[in-house]
Length: 64
Image (cartoon, rainbow, N blue to C red; front, top):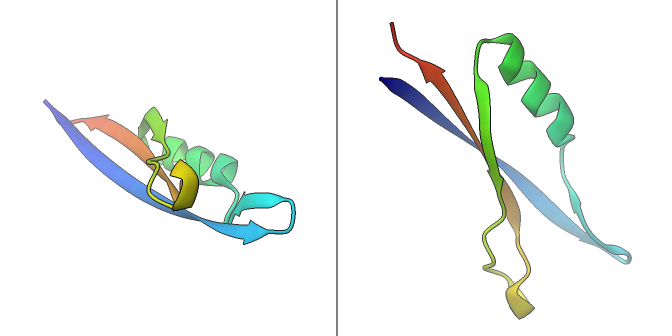
């Protein structure tokens, strides 16, 4: 069995496009150090023109 964790990283608009509000590399490394395994980074298209407003980072951990 596995336990799942969903971490939301909001995106902010800049004049060059969108940018994550926090470094998702750091988020992944921190959770990996805690025993979580990266499953997927998902960016649902919910803003105007089908653009994502956030990333959803999905982790899993085996339950003993």
